[in-house]
Length: 200
Length: 200
DNA sequence: CAGGGCTGAATGAACGATCGTTCAGCGCCC
DNA sequence: GGGCGCTGAACGATCGTTCATTCAGCCCTG
Image 1 (cartoon, each protein chain N blue to C red):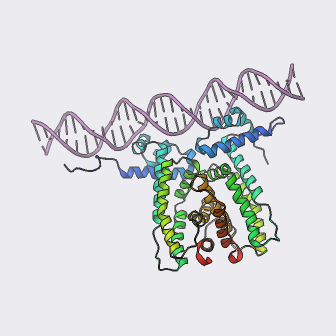
Image 2 (cartoon, each protein chain N blue to C red):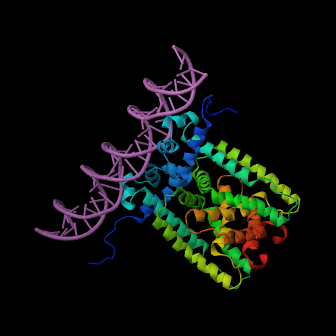
Image 3 (spheres, each protein chain N blue to C red):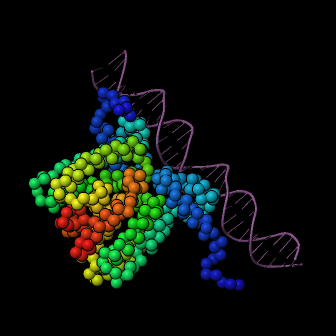
């Protein structure tokens, strides 16, 4: 008689994860327009019908995956840094985390870009994504108060901070360039000059 | 060069343009995964079969449109600036052209992003796009030689120069922000500090 | 403890809709 | 009248989605 809060969901979390992972891989490799449910199910090692036990349809699957990926990215990229460090080292700590996440999760980064450009995300998904991003804004505002960052509109900071690395990781993804440590160092130098007080 | 579709004498350039424009509008509005040839033809005011007289199929249509849009963007954004002006004004002339193109051609900017992320572009298309970009690289190298810009790897300059405005125009496209002159001014300030000698 | 009824997760063939593409015929212009 | 631009119904493939069916594990009864 152990009264469980959830009503006996015998569904396997592993299977759900497998479907999400298969979707991520397939969409990143073949494109959103060319990733049928049949192929997703095959890649996940389940039957087509099973995917519909875990998700309300293809659009809902994509939206769920998008939120999961964005959440994971911001969870690894946003944690606070040691405020006692010099300004440039504080910025490096968070910027390099954000950067390496993109370079080491090509599929996820590409998936995010496809979702955001294709109009497949629902209004609700976008609202939730902006809630998630709020956490990062707070830490930004704190840094400004401590005199680390320039006083910029938050969206301008966001653009200067994330824009360059989005371009570089996209170029790497399309095999146009290879990102070396030197490239990262030079790019970070530019970001520092643009957002740090005094210009780094 | 082998022409993809044999252009006959009586084909109308207007009709070709109408098909391209309809594709741009529809893909930007509904997404690459949800822009069928039937809808494209309807929006262009032609029959489905007509589109196949002008293009070798949907993928070829998308690839042609992508090259046309990129060419048009770089043609308006890249023309040389007066080398006699101060460094910051030279940069402003080209950066603001590039920026305003993105803000005033939302559909085109979104279409480019969808194409580049979705893997629909052929190897040949990407090769041609990089040729088109070469023109901009030359003008960049010239500016470095004249001592205007910092000596950065060209891909780093490209990322610092274009990244922030891509992020901002995307946010505007998704109605997350409104881009004011003040936002542009602040962003341009950051770009100056990151790529100009002396930090602007 | 044995075993039969029951539950619900999992399946995949089948379905209607719609996709990209074709082609036989139509009508306009030279 | 000949030929070319154009049409749109038709086609096979494939899409997202459904649902009748299966069957492994749990509960209850004797």
